[in-house]
Length: 150
Ligand code: ASC
Image (cartoon, rainbow, N blue to C red; front, side, top):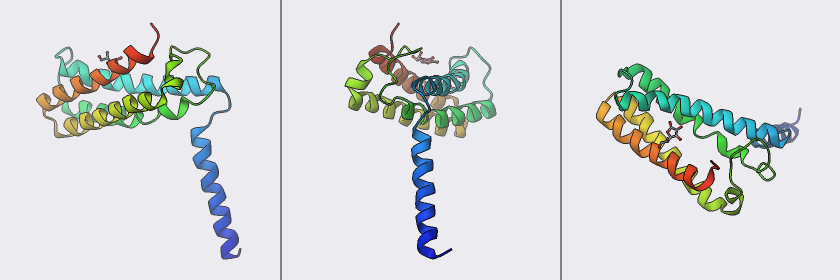
Protein backbone atom coordinates (compact mmCIF):
# COMPACT_ATOMS: atom_id res chain seq x y z
CA UNK A 1 0.00 0.00 0.00
CA UNK A 2 1.25 3.48 -0.81
CA UNK A 3 2.18 5.69 2.14
CA UNK A 4 -0.54 8.23 1.31
CA UNK A 5 -3.16 5.47 1.18
CA UNK A 6 -1.93 4.06 4.51
CA UNK A 7 -2.13 7.50 6.14
CA UNK A 8 -5.64 8.01 4.78
CA UNK A 9 -6.69 4.62 6.13
CA UNK A 10 -5.20 5.30 9.56
CA UNK A 11 -6.90 8.71 9.64
CA UNK A 12 -10.25 7.13 8.77
CA UNK A 13 -9.87 4.44 11.44
CA UNK A 14 -8.92 7.03 14.06
CA UNK A 15 -11.82 9.31 13.11
CA UNK A 16 -14.22 6.40 13.28
CA UNK A 17 -13.08 5.10 16.67
CA UNK A 18 -13.09 8.59 18.21
CA UNK A 19 -16.63 9.22 16.97
CA UNK A 20 -17.82 5.74 17.88
CA UNK A 21 -16.64 6.10 21.45
CA UNK A 22 -18.76 9.21 21.87
CA UNK A 23 -21.86 7.94 20.08
CA UNK A 24 -24.54 5.42 20.85
CA UNK A 25 -26.90 3.43 18.66
CA UNK A 26 -29.91 4.95 20.41
CA UNK A 27 -30.68 7.42 23.22
CA UNK A 28 -31.60 4.57 25.61
CA UNK A 29 -28.11 3.12 25.18
CA UNK A 30 -26.53 6.47 26.12
CA UNK A 31 -28.77 6.72 29.20
CA UNK A 32 -27.91 3.17 30.24
CA UNK A 33 -24.22 3.79 29.63
CA UNK A 34 -24.00 6.91 31.79
CA UNK A 35 -26.11 5.38 34.58
CA UNK A 36 -24.01 2.23 34.64
CA UNK A 37 -20.77 4.23 34.61
CA UNK A 38 -22.03 6.39 37.48
CA UNK A 39 -23.19 3.25 39.34
CA UNK A 40 -19.80 1.57 39.11
CA UNK A 41 -18.14 4.85 40.10
CA UNK A 42 -20.44 5.23 43.12
CA UNK A 43 -19.95 1.64 44.29
CA UNK A 44 -16.20 2.17 44.34
CA UNK A 45 -16.35 5.66 45.80
CA UNK A 46 -18.85 4.45 48.41
CA UNK A 47 -16.47 1.68 49.51
CA UNK A 48 -13.74 4.25 50.17
CA UNK A 49 -16.21 6.66 51.80
CA UNK A 50 -17.36 3.90 54.17
CA UNK A 51 -13.74 3.42 55.26
CA UNK A 52 -13.26 7.17 55.64
CA UNK A 53 -16.27 7.46 57.91
CA UNK A 54 -15.36 4.38 59.96
CA UNK A 55 -18.38 2.39 58.77
CA UNK A 56 -16.00 -0.13 57.23
CA UNK A 57 -12.54 -1.17 58.43
CA UNK A 58 -9.73 0.65 56.64
CA UNK A 59 -7.94 -1.50 54.08
CA UNK A 60 -5.38 0.63 52.27
CA UNK A 61 -5.03 -1.73 49.31
CA UNK A 62 -8.77 -1.99 48.70
CA UNK A 63 -9.13 1.78 49.15
CA UNK A 64 -6.41 2.50 46.60
CA UNK A 65 -7.85 0.04 44.07
CA UNK A 66 -11.41 1.28 44.56
CA UNK A 67 -10.43 4.95 44.31
CA UNK A 68 -8.46 4.26 41.12
CA UNK A 69 -11.51 2.58 39.56
CA UNK A 70 -13.80 5.43 40.69
CA UNK A 71 -11.33 7.91 39.20
CA UNK A 72 -11.35 6.11 35.86
CA UNK A 73 -15.13 5.70 35.83
CA UNK A 74 -15.59 9.40 36.60
CA UNK A 75 -14.39 10.21 33.07
CA UNK A 76 -16.97 8.10 31.26
CA UNK A 77 -20.53 9.37 31.82
CA UNK A 78 -20.18 12.74 30.13
CA UNK A 79 -19.97 11.52 26.51
CA UNK A 80 -23.42 10.00 27.07
CA UNK A 81 -25.24 13.28 27.78
CA UNK A 82 -25.65 14.10 24.09
CA UNK A 83 -28.61 15.78 22.44
CA UNK A 84 -31.80 13.73 22.54
CA UNK A 85 -30.79 11.82 25.67
CA UNK A 86 -32.91 13.95 28.01
CA UNK A 87 -36.00 11.73 27.65
CA UNK A 88 -36.29 8.14 28.85
CA UNK A 89 -35.47 6.20 31.99
CA UNK A 90 -33.49 9.05 33.52
CA UNK A 91 -33.60 11.49 36.41
CA UNK A 92 -31.43 13.97 34.51
CA UNK A 93 -33.08 17.41 34.51
CA UNK A 94 -33.63 19.30 31.26
CA UNK A 95 -31.43 22.11 32.64
CA UNK A 96 -28.37 19.97 31.87
CA UNK A 97 -28.85 20.65 28.16
CA UNK A 98 -29.73 24.32 28.71
CA UNK A 99 -26.82 25.05 31.04
CA UNK A 100 -24.21 22.81 29.46
CA UNK A 101 -21.27 25.02 30.49
CA UNK A 102 -22.28 24.90 34.15
CA UNK A 103 -22.98 21.17 33.95
CA UNK A 104 -19.54 20.62 32.44
CA UNK A 105 -17.97 22.75 35.16
CA UNK A 106 -19.58 20.54 37.83
CA UNK A 107 -18.56 17.37 35.99
CA UNK A 108 -14.98 18.64 35.64
CA UNK A 109 -14.84 19.58 39.31
CA UNK A 110 -16.00 16.12 40.35
CA UNK A 111 -13.35 14.48 38.16
CA UNK A 112 -10.65 16.76 39.59
CA UNK A 113 -11.62 15.89 43.18
CA UNK A 114 -11.93 12.20 42.36
CA UNK A 115 -8.37 12.27 40.96
CA UNK A 116 -7.16 13.85 44.21
CA UNK A 117 -8.93 11.08 46.10
CA UNK A 118 -7.19 8.44 43.99
CA UNK A 119 -3.85 10.15 44.71
CA UNK A 120 -4.62 10.31 48.43
CA UNK A 121 -5.67 6.64 48.50
CA UNK A 122 -2.43 5.68 46.76
CA UNK A 123 -0.46 7.18 49.66
CA UNK A 124 -2.55 5.17 52.12
CA UNK A 125 -2.94 8.16 54.46
CA UNK A 126 -6.41 7.89 56.01
CA UNK A 127 -6.61 11.57 56.99
CA UNK A 128 -5.88 12.65 53.40
CA UNK A 129 -8.45 10.12 52.18
CA UNK A 130 -11.07 11.56 54.55
CA UNK A 131 -10.45 15.11 53.30
CA UNK A 132 -10.61 13.99 49.67
CA UNK A 133 -13.76 11.89 50.22
CA UNK A 134 -15.52 14.92 51.71
CA UNK A 135 -14.43 17.18 48.86
CA UNK A 136 -15.46 14.64 46.24
CA UNK A 137 -18.79 13.88 47.91
CA UNK A 138 -19.48 17.61 47.96
CA UNK A 139 -19.11 17.78 44.19
CA UNK A 140 -21.52 14.82 43.76
CA UNK A 141 -24.09 16.58 45.92
CA UNK A 142 -23.73 19.98 44.24
CA UNK A 143 -24.45 18.48 40.84
CA UNK A 144 -27.30 16.26 42.08
CA UNK A 145 -28.98 19.20 43.82
CA UNK A 146 -28.91 21.21 40.60
CA UNK A 147 -29.40 18.60 37.90
CA UNK A 148 -30.97 15.41 39.25
CA UNK A 149 -34.70 14.93 39.77
CA UNK A 150 -35.89 13.48 43.10
C1 ASC B 1 -22.33 8.82 47.30
C2 ASC B 1 -23.44 9.00 46.44
C3 ASC B 1 -23.61 10.31 46.24
C4 ASC B 1 -22.58 11.05 46.99
C5 ASC B 1 -23.19 12.04 47.90
C6 ASC B 1 -22.16 12.73 48.75
O1 ASC B 1 -21.85 7.75 47.67
O2 ASC B 1 -24.20 8.07 45.91
O3 ASC B 1 -24.50 10.88 45.51
O4 ASC B 1 -21.83 10.04 47.68
O5 ASC B 1 -24.11 11.41 48.75
O6 ASC B 1 -22.75 13.79 49.46
